Length: 122
Image (cartoon, rainbow, N blue to C red; front, side, top):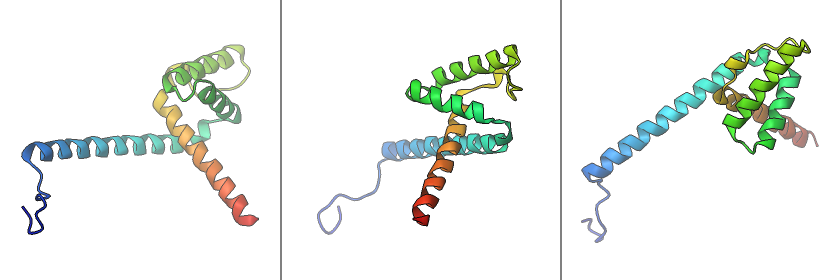
């Protein structure tokens, strides 16, 4: 007990294990997200305006269900490659939910920067 009568802020061993586990999980997830964002940033030149448009359309249509969006995008890539409409930089097997999430984050950041600059200019 503290002098004020409040319990000590010291964690029990179980609480320490839980806190340590939560920290490791959070740290690992942040590293994975950062790695995915970095991979998307290096792959930016692969994305075309059409792919970005289809990504936006599918994400909104699927309400941020990334697995379903990945399926949509893989079908789109396959269809454009089969029809010879566009030289698509991805193979359908290369489209993953993580890759799409990372690209979405990048597009969102770009649009936020655009709107911020528009607000600053006015």
